[in-house]
Length: 297
Image (tube, rainbow, N blue to C red; front, side, top):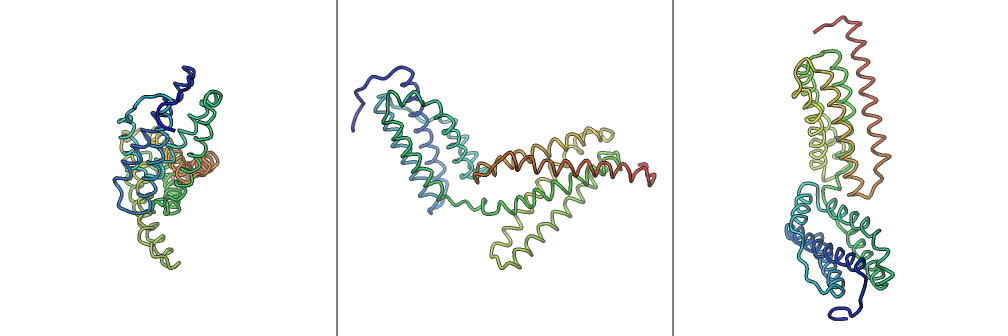
């Protein structure tokens, strides 16, 4: 079927078709840009195939609109940046999730352009099959990242909460937490390395690096409030630290939920409950120890 479709459709349906056409050409440009940064290999070939699929979608909708559209440059740039920072798997699945949500508004289109629904379903199934073949290295080490992140959150949140009441000075708390955090990072990373080695894994070094990076990044973010607030504002620093804990848990679990198609709400509530629960208990322990020992700094 070549050229523009000789069929009049309503202004509302035409607006939907134009939106779909714009989305397809923008995603085509996005996939091509992400693929261009990769070395030759399986992932590059898959992304180029998906890009070609998007271009075909664009041509289908173009036959209805008769218009030539250009990619949205800012959106393409933003997605390329996300791919660099968070990985191409996360970025692509985030794009597809957004497209699935948008397609809820396309119900009226099927009444006027019935073949469009069938075409869209077939093309989406093909793309999902292709995306299921993507293989990104960093996602292989999600388990190591979860281990480092979770351990750092639980251990350091409890430590900082306990020290807050015991020491009541943000600078001393930050110093103590930093020493504890760095030591724990080295301990956790080396334990992961030895564990992977004992299992005969060839990726022991990479696994321990991912664990260590996740742990150290968490340590840095949790201690930061104690460095930013004045020495006497230790309770404000504690509240800010707990807010950072919730934010880290939310961001990390959202990333995992999108990149690995996992459930978000349950994992978020579970991690937040454990980390904040440990913080409350440690806070109480710090208060008891301070009063029992009669320590006053």
